[in-house]
Length: 556
Image (tube, rainbow, N blue to C red; front, top):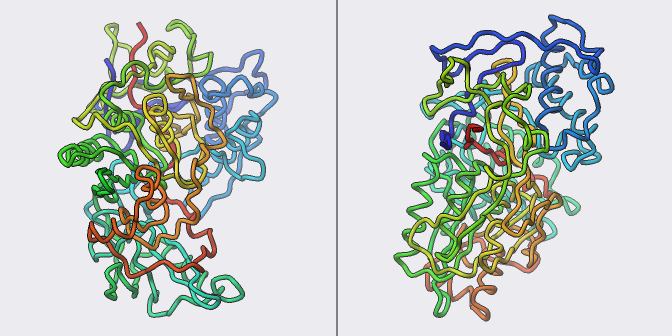
C-alpha cells in the first residue's frame, strides 16, 4: 500500500553511523546502531575515522553514488575524496556541519556535470540541505531565530509579506508594491494585499529614484527591514482601495492557507475561474482548500480556468496530482506522469546491498515499521521500478468540462508546478502566460544525516503520458507577460499577466469592463512609463523550491 503520510519525511532518522529516531519526535521503537561501512578496493582512501565531519562527508558521497539521479556521472570515492571538502566555517544562520555538507554537496553536483550544476553559481540548482532545527514552529508563538516564510505544512513565522516590487513612476519616483502576502499572517490581518504600496518604513520615507535606480540608502533600508526578517516593522502606505494605512507588523508564527485568491470572472458568455496558489503544501493544508475552490467553480458554471503559479516553487507530488485531477476533464484517463529513478534503483533486487538500509520507512504515526522477521522496513525495501512509479488519472471534483486553461508563470514557477502543467498538456489546451519557468523536472525525498540534516538529492525525473520531460531550461511562456509589476491584487483583470490570460480565453475582451462588472478596482493605476527597478527584490524567494515524493510501495 502507498504510504501517504506527509510529515514522515521530516522525521526520517538515520545516519550512516548511528541510526536513531528523530529528535523532533522520539519513538519507542529505537533501531540499533549500525556499523560504519569499511573501505573496499575502490575506496582505498576511505580509512577508519571517528571524525564526525569526515564520516558525514563520506555518507553524503555514498548516498549520492547510489541514489543520485546522475549517479553514473559521479567519480569514484578515491577520485573524489569527499573528506577534502571539509570546511570548519559557520554562517550566521547555519551550523559548521551544514556549511560543511553544503560545500561537499556543491562539489559533488559540480563533479557530475549534470543539469544540477550551473556555471557561475555557488550552490546546486536542485539539490540542497535543510537543518530541521530551523524549521518553522507550530503556530503558537514567534521564534526570532527561525526561518521566515511559510513551510509545506502551512506554518508561517514572519511579518507575512512574501515579496515586493519596486516600480518606477517617473524619472525621480517609484512605488514599492507588495507583490504577495501570506493568508492569516500579520500583514494580511492588517488588511494589506498585493497591489498596496509602501511609502514609509520605520518612519523613513521611500520612493526616490536616483539616476534610474532606487536611492542606495533606500535599498539598504529595504534589505535590512522587509528582507531582514524583522521582529517588528512599521509601514505606511496606500491600500488598493485608495485608503492609507499605518501599521506595525510584529513577527508571529501562524497557520496559513496556500490559496492567495480565487474568484470567478464573467467575460462575455464565459465564466472563467481564477486561482492563485502559493505552494503545494501537505494534504492537511491544501486538499480541503483546493476542493472548496473547485466546488465553487463548478457551482458557478466555470467554463475555462486561469491558475496563477507565478510564485509557486512546488511542494508535495501527491498534492500536485490532486490538483491535476481537479482540473482535468472527465474524459482524462490513463497515464498522468511517470517517475524515473536512476538505473541502479530501477533495477535493484531486494537482496542487493544498499546504503538505504540506514533510512527507516516510518508509518503514518511516525514510527518505524518491522518486517515479519523483526527487521526494520527501510528505503532499501522500496520498489523504484517504472511500473510501480507510473501514476494515472483519477478525476476529482465535479468540474469536468474545462478544455482550456491558462497558467500564469514566472522564473519562480518550479517543480511540482511544472509537473501539473506537463501532466495536463496531453489532455487539454494549455497556454502559458508570463516568463520562462524555473526548469525542474526532477524530484526527491530527504535522506537524514546526523539525525538533523535532511539532504535533498535530485532522485527522479518526471515525464508525462507522451514521454515528454527534460525541461531543465524551463518551460517558455507562450505569451510574454512583460514585467510583473504587482500593482493590482490577485484576481483583478487589470493585473498585467491576468489581462493577457483573459484575452487568450476570451478574445476581444475588455478587461477594464470586467474589472468594473466584478467590482474590482485599484488605486494604483497603470501608467505607460511604469518600469521595474532593482529586480533583485522581485527575485528574492524565501519559499520552498522542489518536488517531494512521499508515497512508496514495498518491493514484492
